[in-house]
Length: 189
Ligand SMILES: Cc1cc2nc3c(=O)[nH]c(=O)nc-3n(C[C@H](O)[C@H](O)[C@H](O)COP(=O)(O)O)c2cc1C
Image 1 (cartoon, rainbow, N blue to C red):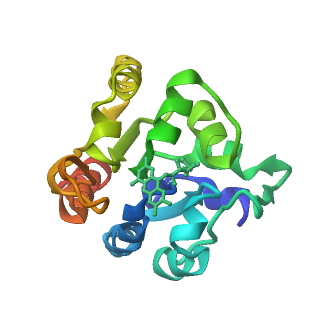
Image 2: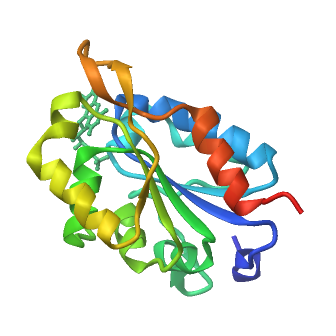
């Protein structure tokens, strides 16, 4: 990746992927968005790599994927800073309760949370978690904090969750998320 690769035409999305059971849906998301003419740079948490491979996301986004163990230096700048500066939008889908809490606290313990602290691009998050985790006062407060800083949330939806419970915590559909991202990054002329 070269630095002049980091200018914003086509529009640039950083897609953060975290360690949720919904992480496999990031594959469809990366595919839909890159087919819509958006340059998608995927940044994965370490836990996310247990749920979906970087190889899958690399094939579908047609871009190198950044992981904790494989963060390149781009013309002297660490990827989490270069991508934070180049992004037109940062979307974390799915976002875990953990990354949501870390972001609310301003913790920067890995490549994705560092990028979330470094970027001045809009940040959108699509949560996915057990309903009790989503409704826990700690998560509610974290979401309020992040909303207060301008972070936008897509979903979660209500329904049958992967953990076997019914409730709120399903990641919003790939169709809904990609529709919103495309409308923002590639608005009709
Ligand atoms: C099978 C399985 C599914 C999980 N699904 C979720 C989930 O949907 N949402 C969530 O917040 N945590 C989920 N977790 C817990 C996270 O993986 C765990 O908190 C992890 O540390 C998150 O790391 P990350 O936030 O750095 O990606 C799951 C754990 C397992 C074992």
